[in-house]
Length: 152
Image (cartoon, rainbow, N blue to C red; front, side, top):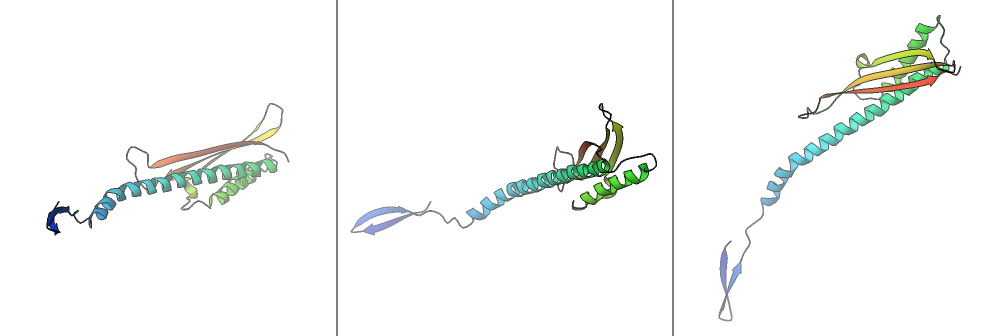
């Protein structure tokens, strides 16, 4: 640090002047920026995965409700399954960049222990992150399963 000698009433005083800190903020910002960007992108990816998971569970529930409210017979099975699939795909349209070809839907009809007919719907959808995180998979497989008794 520079030292300046000042005179006041014939006395000498040493005054220490701090160096200029003009570039200090820029250096600190350059160090912190990659950390902030990593945290921001991580939060965005986590939020997107969670949001897509919620929509997938909701779509599966909507498909199961569609199957539970319409009676299945051997003559109407194809139409019934198409209605369930359409209800699920319509619900998934809210997901940004949704690709219906990647959505896997499994529909099963059975009878429970009480003799009541029930429908079980399972869905799987692969989700891709924005960033290829080191040590983490780029594609996350989201799945949901809902079982409901038929009541009509």
